Length: 127
Length: 368
Image: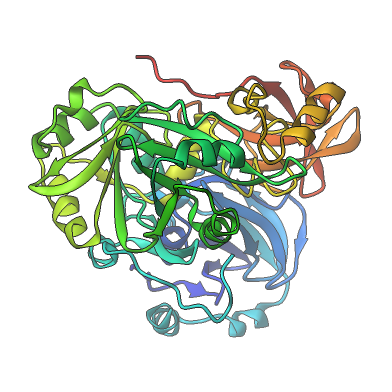
């Protein structure tokens, strides 16, 4: 299971890429593989203020509905519109074109609550 | 239902599923594959366009024997049993006195006095107790649940794949017939039945012979059947408009409400639930199962409220993306007044009402 370097990870299997004041958020390869074929994703709205680890939407596979949790707090400044037409992007390319949304960071300190790649790799190895 | 202290059982094919990378889930008291590595959509596609292979050994097989089976079973079920000819299979429903359903089943008549009854895994213990509580003259029952295996091959290529392994000419079999033959040299029952809306066969055999047949089918030819899990099976049966016990039928939701009136033979002199079902038909105002096609991309799921004229009036009973249609489909229990095809209703999904249209079942019908 790929766990790219340069990203931070949540225990709920989201990844975060921080560039300056903005963080890009997606789900991990482990998450997409566990979910199976993704047929629908409900993302937060532009301008919404999200708390760290808050429940912010759902991702649905053919058979199951799973909650999405926001890994880092902030205001939504961009949403990946491609996912509306092609939610299977989350399966095919979870770390790149399957990104979900971007937030303007509320509190830089929240990074400390996320996992470095080696820690996340250990987490999914136990699962 | 599974008691919490009951051990989860394994079918004879458990090792084979693990080796194929299946994701296993508890279902009907057994640890069963819900999907394999390729995923539900690919498995669904294989069954609709080529062939898929299913382990259904969790389903309960009861052997019925004796001259009295037909007459006895006719008093316990809604459909005709005694009139089934040897070599023929028939769908049926066991009801309670109130007209709710104990289970939906298939009777396979092997010869004059030997029958196979296949019941849902989750209802196996309940159904066995029900049969034992209603002994019949000239009827002997044997519970083979967990002792016998069941492998299904489903999809348009099923005949050409399976026939090379079977002594009998299965290509000549009609839909809903069965025969006793040898499969890879071992005694087996082959039936042209299934739960996917495609052509296909179900092979009942000794658990000891299951792995040999499973492996041989998966190694057959350049395009072997795809192993398919319970996830794909549920999507396939929903597209085909087939009921799933616990969803479209329950102890309080019987065959008339489930739109299975064709299977209820009121001409039979007496059977459990007959009076209640007849009263339901006479009154006519019962809520019933309908098909729904949603306008939008959000899937409807079992338990979501259904709104008629803005008021909660029913409930989604099953729901999924239908890959064969490219749309979200569902079954729902709705009032009689909202059950006509074309009726516009709403499904409440996480606080938002999503429009849908009532449609006739099935959602999908194969072209041949």
